[in-house]
Length: 445
Image (cartoon, rainbow, N blue to C red; front, side):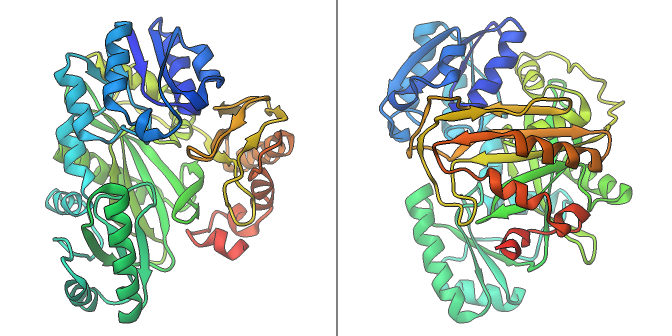
């Protein structure tokens, strides 16, 4: 097993990784910006290294500072968490070239799946269903218009190098496509340094379902069930649950088999997620993208399968066998995760500030993965995620009951937060029925 680990991230995911690593007897090094010096993850690590000012480009995306911290502290491995450098193939390759262990898939897999057009083409060749769309970037608006005419409106305009729900737009006709094409291309060039754009079919009523995969050290790829991620605002997830209320045993079998084929197609190792769109009207599903990292919503899978995914990541990176029998994976119960963000509960606009009160819910089947506590300052420099509230139960109904009680008990005063939104959602008939889709939040507003 790895003996020393540098966590190249911040907030709740850094704290989450630190917790498992310390349980395994691994010495943990945290890196942090000036803005995060007082956050819990810094205090909970065995060592902490200041790597720069608040600007992420000068700290959490500063590859030279992170590698220098690893060298100075004698770290053996680097865990990137999610976001920041987690899907940066160049950084992953540099880490390994430096003689360090990268806790994630290799640079080739990250590269292969990082470009959405290349990923679509690879998946189609592997027999994974993909939505109708372009097989090459739409080089200009004329190419986009031609592709859209063949696919049929409405279409989704997407940044080929995008991710996390960023760099997308919907066009219902030619005029809208002209506007969205220019907007997405400019955004992609600014945010990702790559203005490549793809055009694909848009599903007005669709569910977002993903499959957790794990590429083992011996070369096998296993699927650890699916997660429903359809409660979203601005194409970004707010709630995830496992198993999906929309997935039958027969559909689940097809979904998981396709996800395994996706991982095998790129020789995948470590944790990853195959994201799909599910048409509830037909039962068809289509590959959306692969996240070559640990997901924000991994705890719901941990509950249902009774495993620690961070521990499994560390075991794969160490060349060890998993803690579970890959041939006897048996899910049990139901889990729901709610992303507690520093944003107002109506328009979901960020609301940083000093946390005056922070009281986390407790009880059977309740888990809180938090990045903050009372007295901390939520700054405007990073993602608005404060904590993840995860509940589990023997059934979906039991998990929902626990979710209602936990949301009622979660007290946060200071920064704006979306806890009231979850209280509203948990009384919403559409959500409670399990028959919701990605438009549920817009219909609530």
